[in-house]
Length: 306
Image (cartoon, rainbow, N blue to C red; front, side, top):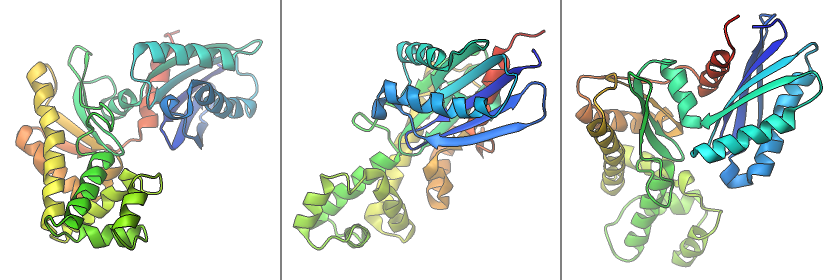
């Protein structure tokens, strides 16, 4: 590695982007944050503009950089074609005289795997706004289950829990099983009646992931409807682990959970209970290192040995 190489990792989500880096000739650790840049939400052009601006700011503060190595885990960059296109666009946006640039783009789930296990085998279960089960086999093959997005699935996610919670409220308003979810949702979003609920449920003012914590809180308070929703959702997410294991046995028996919902103690315990039914002999841990560290690890591996 040359003395003027800047290594950068990016964890790019829908709401924010985290940057972590290091310079080869210094012990300095670089950390920055910027706006989200999921290309499916903001468009590829805006995503590239936001990410290149964040990287440019890190470069501008440092003199003598001759080589930039960037590894980016980007939410929404699930296909090889999108990854390749984004990498090329970032390479072009970051080009400047006297600077060699190398860019790698992967799905953000991959950098979470790298943060959890580096290059070793293991499984991660992501439960946040969306959900995904992702594994690296002993021979390095990536295997996934779920992660189809809110319209097709994302069981156990904020979207799925929120949607199920709102359906339970609608059913209660129609005369179905009563649930404290009705009052909880009405209070949280300042709703007065059925008309308010119907109108607000079809606007951005009532985002499904914002309803998910309400469902979990009601389940914790022994609301039977909310408890059933939570159980069904985490069981459906755990079932994807079963499906993944049925497709390959060449994976280490260890699980790491991550995502915004797993920071909720009640949700985390419900998910772990469901996962243990699928993986009774495996270890289950929380992701201790941030995914951006996985991106930085990938950047380090992109640099050839001297």
